[in-house]
Image 1 (cartoon, each protein chain N blue to C red):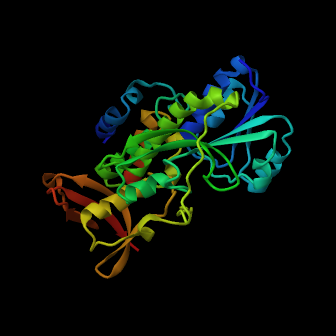
Image 2: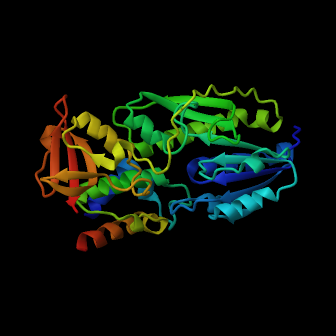
Image 3: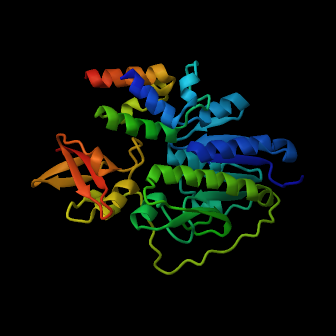
Length: 285
Length: 76
């Protein structure tokens, strides 16, 4: 098989980056390209470093944006950069270079929900479907032509981390489908129809502004709680609320059957329309 | 307590019960998403807070490490 790319650089973290990295490594014999991995955002539970070590893939940790930009700017050979769960914004000067092609996995169905933390926003907005997009990277954020998309349902109890996991699986499926066409530079990419004034979700934005208004319906509160639930990853600060006129921080929550109710300190139970309860454990600030 | 932890592991990651090594994460027995589920369940069942600083591969290297982590947090 033939490709003009002599080097592939994978940048990212988490499951999608790891699986994509393994796949590209396994396909080296088909094309003969070189491969390296760059970790831009270290993660406590990341296994990409281990994957690199086991397979002899060159690994570099570059948390500094400028260092990473400079490093990529030095690339002279024809290179495919695969951005998988990566929040580094590629400089326009790099994107426009003739010898560089960049593809990125976005965790929503572009042109909808561009920017950061898309799984949170789709849950918060009550969407019933979302998906992933692999697209070419252009100077605009999440604006490049779409190479492949995959969709999935969002269940009524789906939490942000569960949806993220599902989307990472879809990202891998999508990548396996389009990899050869991208390498051969004949992928049928479709330009995005970006509406003027399209909302771009920024890393500083938090669904519900991070506040759980207990006057709202439990169904809406549950959506907000699920939308920011990434376990202990600290993507968002804990939600806050107001209890008896004082500020409190949400520790955890759960939907339970009424018979599972157990009274305890700093605990709230709010009834859903279907009779189940939203259990919320909080801590006064 | 130990029995309850094992029940939770059985629910979310049955393979962890038979694993006798010391790095479940790197060996692919357990992934970061399963860890989130287990942490959430442990917090709820034992009414404890597992701070992010404890959610590291070392504390999830095998079932004994998880039991030890819960024991420490209950004793705090």
